[in-house]
Image (cartoon, rainbow, N blue to C red; front, top):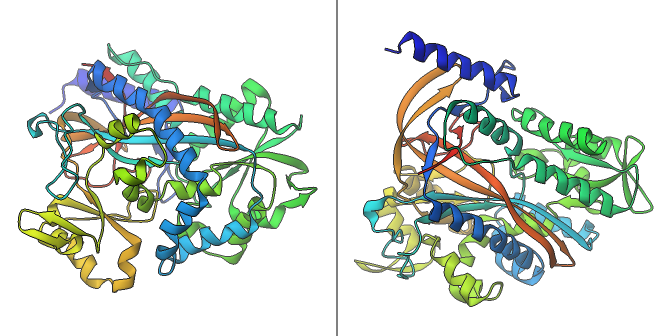
Length: 462
């Protein structure tokens, strides 16, 4: 049972979280604090530096991939035959006005693997390369709606009041600075930022924090609209997207990555209107497609990856990759050659089955994998990839959710924020700007904070 001192300390932390704007909406509309941990996650200097060093290289990879429409089309078109959402995104290119400027705000997510694995996370079906030099295993790279720069900045402030050795973190300011620079580069003195939101946005406060700082620092207005509202209220004038009587210099997507965001024809027309304009999209269509799970899977193949990065960087990337396969791929196993779908059905605890979706809550684990594979038609299998399940390092954590406190054996996913400016695909500036940690109970599969699966956390020096 908690002592009175512990109870008061936790209650004080919850009140400070609310004071700092760490808020979210519950499904019924009630306000509560965003879930957070009171156990900062320890990381070694070498692991931290490796993540920071890799961020710009991964950003450049995404820029390079996004510039190769032939590769994107060849890789994704077969999937679009059975995936209406992906087909809709690919069809948007008909309405696209290519822009010379690109701004990528991405987040690259990793787990640190268990020490007892010998720091070699690949299973027998993967490349067999020596991965002893890295304890990192990449989960995914998010090229669209890389969320939580505001909330995690505020949590770092909170943790710095309570704990020692917290690693400084403020991704909020550089993200906002990048928006301001893009708007300035657009060339209209009174231009605005459009934030594309979902109709029932539970993570609104993370977005409001960005909007507020953009106004406080640069006096740049943000207009928040759903895709449907953009179609209903927006217009084109000499190639510019016009909303609220002003030119939209940049369009920042915090929606548009799930089929639900395009549930009506008006929502699709809203995205088409954006694509037909000169607004700088964060991310643009090609960069959104570059972040697809299928692209991630194909890039684990050395012969493909080497088309986009140097051999030296390719080797460093591959040390962080885990096995990823299409379901019909023939792989080598201890029992001989077998299709990836058959092998995963026999060993479902070793894999995660992922569709081409972002936002969490879409993946299949354990016994649900063979069940889902059995239910799928053969042609539907192209829309899924199998990813080796990462055996993440565990630790004890105190998690605070909706005012309640629980202690769990947990795992922590670490994301590094990266900002990259490019001109016609040529990188102009490229940097790592901070981190996001999400801590969850070991038995929880998904990692979404506002969807209720994980808690925000900070990094501490080991």
